[in-house]
Image 1 (cartoon, rainbow, N blue to C red):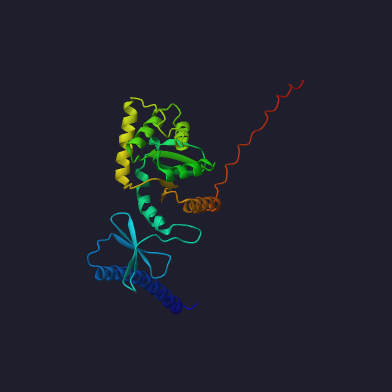
Image 2: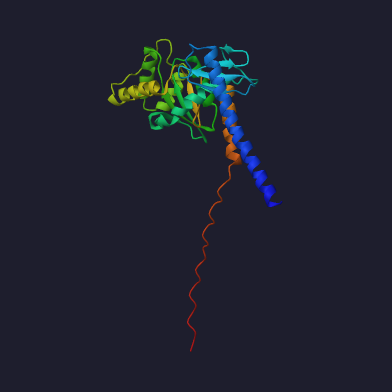
Length: 269
């Protein structure tokens, strides 16, 4: 290709790239400005596009979501569900919550399993949705779970203490979530300062990351609010596919070993 043509093509490509970047920013700014004009008293945090053309997710009050159609000047409340049962609204909220994943101390959780997928489970022993999620994960051998607690009632707090006071916390967790300590069953509550310190840590952590309900799951660092099993399965499948496509580091060749030779007999003179 002639040098002048190469220069022209390079300039054109650069212009198109920069224009695309500027145009996308202008569009975002225009959408935000339009929303402010349409709803001047609505205080929101940010706007982001959705897979639906012309529909934007508006985040407000930290983790709440509504949908905005700038072409019609309409705000829509409620959840957006995709085919297959994936809750797209909870997916947006989970993305916001995922920013706090690194703040979660895994060593404070009860470790269950040895699978390749890391699942952090923040749960309440009396929450029916939490029990649904616990049953689902108990049936999978490909996950390693770290279980922390966010009790929403005094009764739930006592059950958490009962779990933490047990010699085998993982086994006791499974029994409590299976309902074996419901309906006024006797709980074993120890007077251990370490347990009380852990209870305090759970409360502080929940407040810090913005917990408003249970359960919350972090699938390899990505948050899912509620027992949204279809979304959880999609995320686990995506991570498994990524792991298969990732280049494998070839194993180092084993060092060569030779069998030592027996010493030769001395030659006769």
